Image: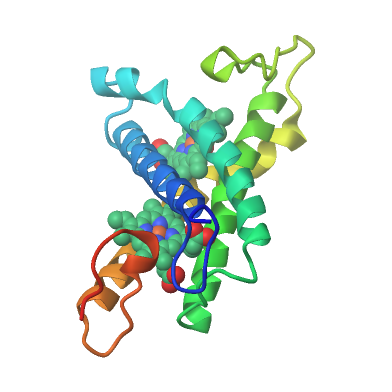
Length: 181
Ligand code: HEM
Ligand code: HEM
């Protein structure tokens, strides 16, 4: 079944989740960069409204992705090195933790949150819950920038492996491109 992973290649569902999350992460990088360089500019006003719903979508896709990765664990392609394996685990962890602590902060703020019109949090009047807000206040931005740097290293490694004669090309595992040789 092409949806399932095999030791040679990731299946269609793993690929769809990988490229879907990758596109949303690029979008988060854009909104975070604009807000940090040009806060309250017209561009920030336009883009920032999408940051929270996009982050929420990443979390939903990542929960599905984690479940699907566990289902496919025994048959997906083997990691090329212990470092690659660790890198992928850290990417999963960041993609789950960053939006989760942001949602806790959102809840703790007492403000309503309705991504795509979904009544997720109705908000309350009784004051903020500080301990729910503390983790994201401390870490959300820093972990976010760390994720972007790590994702960039990941992309550079994928292309390095594609073009280095000594390394194994892993791109055909995730994308329908002809093998290098
Ligand atoms: C994987 C998903 C996410 C990533 C990678 C991400 C990344 C970032 C980054 C890098 C910043 C710092 C921008 C700066 O330095 O000015 C930031 C800020 C912020 N994000 Fe996210 N975010 C994600 C999800 C979310 C979600 C789900 C919410 C809310 C529900 C959220 C709410 C905020 C808020 C309120 C700020 C401004 C305050 C702060 O810097 O902590 N983010 N985000
Ligand atoms: C141009 C952009 C990208 C390229 C060319 C790319 C390429 C690849 C390739 C070739 C693999 C398979 C590696 C192997 O099996 O050894 C892979 C896996 C992976 N990639 Fe990417 N990637 C890109 C963007 C991203 C982004 C933005 C993220 C997340 C922030 C990401 C997260 C992952 C993870 C966690 C895996 C492990 C397999 C899985 O469970 O999906 N990738 N990527």
